[in-house]
Image (cartoon, rainbow, N blue to C red; front, top):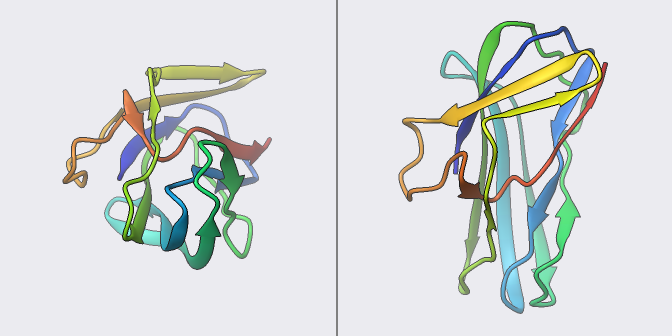
Length: 127
């Protein structure tokens, strides 16, 4: 479910990248990026999971420009018959070169996921 993140430096493109795989079954996944509650990008995919705990990439159909010092909500909603794996031990800030992402829990989350644990183990961006 959603986690909010705030960018410190301007990025040209960004995407929510991998998702955790689930039990062996068919699933749909919706990834979405919102700014001030308005969707700026989303994608829905169908996939078959082999039941392993590895992640796989899900990208938006087009690059999304992220503005500095702005909060965004990134979400991944999975729909399937089996429970999914999820990440734990999330961090509140990540710095990569001159780019810093700050994470906080989102009020959009309805299942207890957020900074500490959830479905989005990585953000891929281009500075």
